[in-house]
Amino acid sequence: MASFIVEGNHRLHGEIVPQGAKNEALEVICATMLTTEEVVIENVPDILDVNNLIHLLSDMGVIVKQLNDNTYSFKAENINTEFIESQDFMNKCGRLRGSVMLIGPLLSRLGKMYFATPGGDKIGRRRLDTHFRGICNLGAKYDFDAEKKAYAFETEGRLQGTYMLLDEASVTGTANIVMAAVMAQGTTTIYNAACEPYIQQLCRMLNQMGAKISGIASNLLTIEGVDQLHGTRHRILPDMIEVGSFIGMAAMTGSELTIKNVSWNDLGIIPDSFRRLGLRLEKRGDDMFIPQQEHYEVERFLDGSILTLADAIWPGLTPDLLSVLLVVATQANGSVLIHQKMFESRLFFVDKLIDMGAQIILCDPHRAVVIGHDHHIRLRANHMVSPDIRAGIAMLIAAMSADGVSRIDHIEQIDRGYSKIDERLNAIGAKITRVQ
Image 1 (cartoon, rainbow, N blue to C red):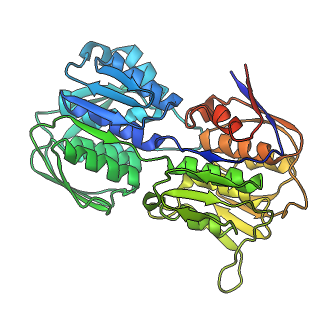
Image 2 (image 1 turned 45 degrees about the vertical axis):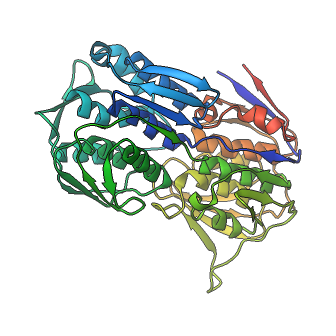
Image 3 (image 1 turned 90 degrees about the vertical axis):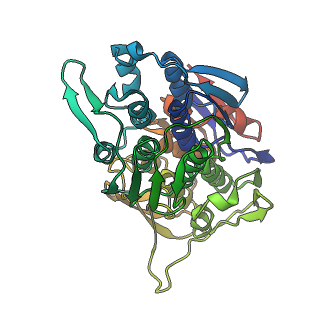
């Protein structure tokens, strides 16, 4: 187990480039299983979750080649069915949340598969009903295999296109169903589909491979099944969550920072959410410039009531950035209500921020009121443990702005979503040491 030792109160300066999007990478890498031809993917982030998925595909018989630091080729010409039915496959799936998106592609290719309940962040209940119901709507059946402690999926012949209304706009659920439907017989209509940029990118890549998907960027997708897909070349978007994390770091350390190549058109409401906390952000081409700012004031609603920042399905605010926005609010001038609707355990990390001197009232598992210090009361160093990726980066941001030296344990959680974050931040002025 590794830890970060963080010396706080150092300003950042210069430029930083966001990595490729973690969530998109997990989806498009799983999609390479849908063809026997080579698929080349650029801007793949060098992070634990993505690397584990790549290793899993290699174990499954996919020929994986690393062409350069962030470019890989995948050729799933021959799939090792013996490995897919093994306990080793079950164990590896159980440690990787993104492995759930292998169900759709493998059912299309093989007609059957075993799958263990996936692991991932400890942020509360994350049900898979949308995945399973959607795939079963296409004609698959599943049972729980008590001996293997896994779900057994099977199809009778080819999957069949149909109409379905999803019970929730699940991003990974939509991705799984889309990948199962692209080679189903007939037409599939998915209503209440997720439409995040990650899903848009997946659909565009599949269309480049020969799929027929319309309605991209909306919540109504229509998929005409095809007999086979071919290879392609695809580039992953910059990670919007990392962009938001860098904004938070600049704000909390009072730094001037340029974030390069952010793909502004795919950031949605994220820039405006930080502006509502009083931050100034400038668009310079496709770069984001954050000027040094000693004070930032939280806006109020038009009737004078306290600002509320809440997560919502796209194009609403992504839940993955609420932890960062919460930390930024601790040093704003004003108060804000953070409402985390989607996960019931994501706000529990605020106890550590309170220990650091933040004025936060945790109302319940979903809501926290943050009373900003406006830098009149600085955060103080603390010893923390990262419970998940996003809480971990929020703790790191708090530690970077605090007086004194903080320690963050279990940083493997941060490594799951952020590539060499200590090295990259140290290059622009941070003081972070990784220790075992």
